[in-house]
Image 1 (tube, rainbow over the protein chains, first blue to last red):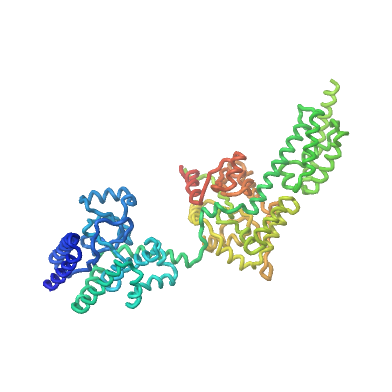
Image 2 (image 1 turned 180 degrees about the vertical axis):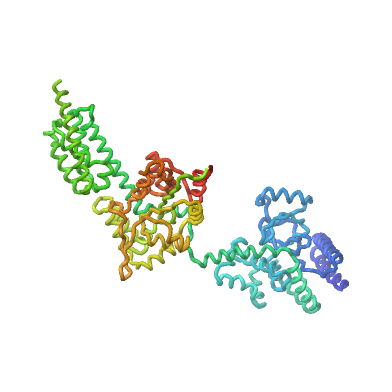
Amino acid sequence: MMVARTRSQKRKLEEINNQKKIKTKKKATGQQTSNTKNLRDVKKKGKQLAYVPRTSPRKSYKNGEYVLAKMSSFPWWPARVASQKSIPTEVRERLKRNFRMDNGIFVQFLPSRDYAIISSSNVLPLTVDESRFILDHDLSTKYIQKTVGLIIASVKRKVSFSDVEEDEFEPENTRKKLQKPIEKPKKEKIEATPKIDGGKRLKNEKSSAEISQTSKQRPSRRSARVRMATDNAQKSPSPIPSPKKTAKKRVRFAGSLEELPKFSLEYQLAQPISTVDMYAQVHYIRFNTLLYYRYQLQEILLSYNHYPQESDMSHVHQILEMIENFSAINSELLESTKLYSLFTLLVKLSDIPLDEKYDFSSRFSTLLLQFQAFVQPKTMTSNVSTAPIGKNAQVNTEAARPSVITT
Amino acid sequence: MAQKKQLYVFSDFDGTITLQDSNDYLTDNFGMGNANRVNLNQQVLDGSISFRDAFAKMLDSVHLSYDEALEVLKKNVAIDPSFKPFYEWCKSQDIRVIILSSGMEPFIRALFEQYLGKEEASSIEIVSNDINVHPDGQWNIVYHDDSHFGHDKSLTIRPYAQLPESKRPHMVYCGDGVSDLSAAKETEHLFAKKGRDLIKYCEREKISFSEFETFADIHKDLQKLFFSS
């Protein structure tokens, strides 16, 4: 078995050397080192080979690009390349302390979103073809296969991994769409190849050739790989946190089933003013307007230390005119502004300057009669009870006024 | 120190606890529509129709039966999720919560039922307008009092405010609009909804207030004000 492996490796190396002289040397050395490391690990552990990605390593990766990363005691795990800025400073500093080499690549493992610095030799690109290969041949644990399936969906839809992950818990229609790539027959794969770029076509051809070779020569290895995958699923600690995440997502789904309306603070603040509050605003303005009129009349006509002058009467006329034209007077406004009480005192005034010109006395009486229609009988009785006090007060004022006039 | 006086929390409902005004929601979506409602509001402003009559017309235009209206409100009117833990805390601290609303009591209880549970919904104190359900399922509003508003919220608070200082409880009001201004003046502390009109009028009237976004903020502030010692 060992001899056969080395022969196949030699053939690959010869093909690469024939194609490109200079680059093949570098690639050959890289593959040799990676393969030898893997062989050494196998010898030490005494286990059969687990899944090894077929993609070739690169010198550099773009931020957000999907990769397969290898950590000790873990299988090749799907991840994406992360920029240093996106990593929290504390996490970044802690990772840098533990990793002292220069060839480290910042990656974020999926779906756990854990960050790590992995040496470039243990990072390989995760292409769509490689993802399909993983799913078709059950080369990893179910947990990893699920994640790889989501990666395929995100690449196809050109959306982020998080969006695809959230959509997984939507109704069944979207679930069926996600399952379609896995269920596609071989013929559909052949039809799909023309859409892929030329370089990818070559890779597909190689992959199909390799599949045929493996199927013919070593049928028992597939069963062995399946066993290894199941063993890894049982032993690997990474699936442990998954039940919590799935539970949380199920809670979200359950919430959507109840169909309770969602509360949004922004939406609440953006609501238009309600009918009740609209009227309350108008009532507020009316109240303050009538209150202003009341204070003006009271100050001019009923102040103890101020006798009304002819120069004030034009202002009194204007105020009365506005009260007479005021619309929508109601009992609440009259009670709150005490306007009714004011006019019960005003009608009892005598010797108002320029009364002949502006006809104040009759206007006071007319307005009082109009207000009485809004005032309730209780308040009328209360006002009647206060009438003697008002009369006494007016008598005092009348007595005071003649003395002022005589002097 | 133990709390000597009991604490009363008065709260508006529509727009303060709920996402939107439930009365206007019914009128706009299942009644005369937004345009006609705005036109009727203009008639109220002109003084050609009173608010009581206009508001009754709006609600009478809703063509849903009582049960249908309940279902519609339950499906579309959301409640602040932080109100439930706030209410539970109030019960544990023997704080009396009283809902003052211009809406209708059966609809308010129905909304509370799916957020607080049946027991809490049936026991929570609500002072609001009522409805009269006819045998055919149709309904109409029954106003709380004879005021021009239909429900003068200050009438509920004033009896407590007029008590002597030794017997007067601590009173707090939570609201969002100008219709809450008269009630807010009767209480010793006001929580005004951030970003809504009540704040502007409080500043104009020089009424002290605290801003809140959700009932979680009120919960924290009450703990500081009345339970910190």
